[in-house]
Image 1 (cartoon, rainbow, N blue to C red):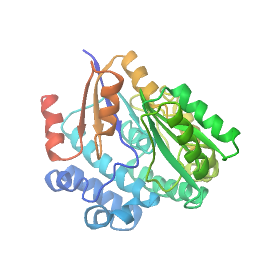
Image 2: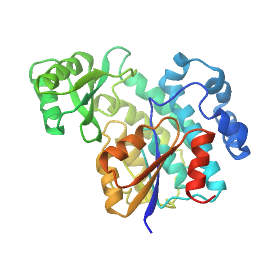
Image 3: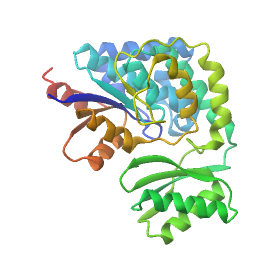
Image 4: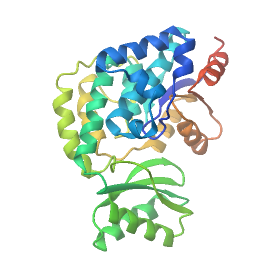
Length: 313
């Protein structure tokens, strides 16, 4: 019998109305939304369910909103006896993975990621940084395109998200990102397109945000992980509870090694992946990495019920 992994999506998957049908159907999910309201001191339900795209796109709003939806869906799975052997999250999703592993309490995590979002936005003024997805090119060629852009004097740019074969995201100063896209296209990339983000995540420009986050983490209690949490920083399980805070600080400005994470999970015996949260991005990445494994997502009542049925619940 193979192992099951819970995966949690990151920023970019957010949409107005996410999680509403789940909360209205399952009291365990609604309770999580109520806990988020109390922890944050404002009506996050109103922001997510009746707000607008612009408000939801602001990073310090996006992060607690996504973590709340993921924790709410997770609560329903747990209540119904669906458990995982290991867990991981893409970028922001790593906090939800720690919630799943009981190493960080939900109310602590949701407050923390609101501040994380604020610090990440403050680290690079709006319009200065950018990100782009490069499709259909080998990792080495994308890395070379970034180096060439820097050598051409365009500024700082680096690979940041190793998502799946043929998909690598780059980030840095806007002009450098644009120049790297030109070099990548010349090398044969199918597409090199800017992403609609408000900051250049997971690169060295975000180090000041990590320093501020370290200060916040000093006040956050961290417990033993009830299951292995694979971190974006190394693509391996976090070695011990006393490493969690250091890794979360590094994670802000380190590349996300997602493809390696999934490959390491499969090597460790995982054959079933359940993506929890809005969208199906991680499910599609898993399928591109290995077609033999089972990958499904839980984002609304219909997909959540399909997951419960899969596990015989």
